[in-house]
Amino acid sequence: MQSSTPQKPFYVVSMGKFSALFIATMGLYSLYWFYRHWRLIGEAQHKNTQPFLRTLLNVVFIPALCTELANAEKAKAQSYNWNPRALALGYIALQIISVAAGFAVSKGYISIYWALIQIPLLLGHYLYLYKFQLVANRVCDDPFGKSNATFNIHNHIWIVFGIVLWLDEIYRLYLLITGQITL
Image (cartoon, rainbow, N blue to C red; front, side):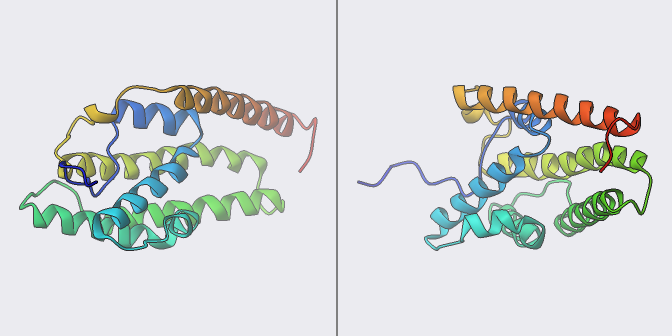
């Protein structure tokens, strides 16, 4: 039996919920976020978008995701203040910097203090995906994401898990900086 409401081509989530889950989970929420977008695109287009693969390789597939959203925006004759290409390239650049800095710190090529760069890089990733989500919500005719604004039990579990991750990272960074442990 087919639903009378058309399938939304993108994942809709309120910006408050998106922000809380992204920041609380140190960005791990983005994996679920990418997966949901690709799965819904596939369902709306009746094709296999391989959402799991595209999620794992999100840095490779973010240009395609931005193109999908830009095309949907044009098809609805909408025009929002965003640049799909710049968003994708900015996200990719931050990912490359993040991986390179993490590698260099772990190999001892640069000071452990460079590990602190991961926090602004995480916030940069957040801002790029936030901008994308704003447009996705509008394209799906739910600009405030009201259809997915409440937190369910799974969200709360992930937030608690994320807080534990944050505390563990802060503690490990403290131990590294004070020389109590080494890499």
